[in-house]
Image (cartoon, rainbow, N blue to C red; front, side, top):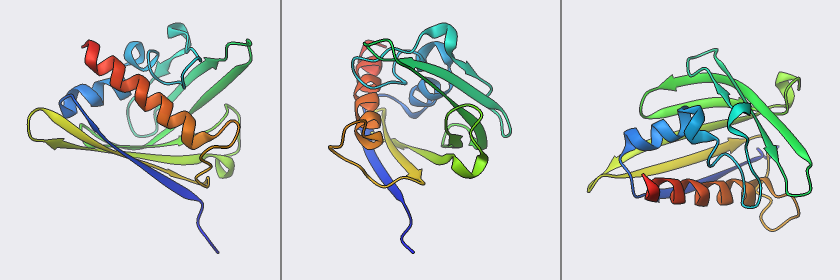
Length: 148
């Protein structure tokens, strides 16, 4: 049986601690936890960064469609690893994807980020592609880090 999963790797122009903060600070997360053209209202973001802690946020598409999202932190090792479930609120645990984010310090105050999503095939180029949505979110993260 083939495992459904994909990995996205990026090098970011910010120190690892800054990237960690972008993942864990609700004010910063609201600025990039969404694909292009979509917004995440800051008041919708709640983050309790601890093992067993929960998070939630709402993405709003240009046409007004809403995408509530949330999950639970499975592993928290500041500033190097976050592992958490990712699904619509109320979804069965078995239906949730599991995301692992590993951050590694690079020379020159840069950070290597490895994003791994377990439970979904790489669906590049399809309408409503999860892979492409995360790539766009990481482009939003890049823009946020440049501003900091």
